Image (tube, rainbow, N blue to C red; front, side):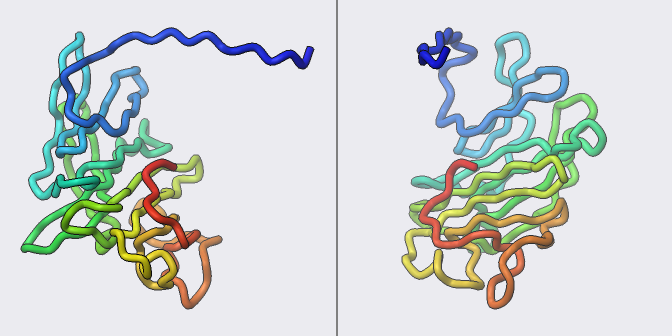
Length: 196
């Protein structure tokens, strides 16, 4: 039977009063983690929000902030979690991909390692998208925004307006674009990738 039927959808409010929740992941024990663009990563326990990380360098303005969250495909073994975020340190603003380790009690993100830095950011936050997903082979797919600068998506060495594909250390993987492109670039010419 090729008849199309509309699927039924049932919604349940899990939590309210949040400020721009952006991404969610589920731990193997079904604990829900989520981030809010303003700069927190939290979990829900017994209906309560418990903040487990609040990186001090998150630069939350306009469309920018803490905009991506993903579990590593091998999370059960390495406990890696990735965040995409606009960062401000030493007066410089960029977008970066950060790898963390969730502690055993799931109460804190530890062992921060910034594995991609220098993705362009606009001080107003405009077109500062960044989203990350972990593939089953361990590679990371990262969508980036063009920082509202028209030349960025076409520039072969600029990481803005691109899909990047890297390993857990932020290094390029096979199958990306060849020279003259930065070897982390998988595809280019995008405007403001906020989902992947």
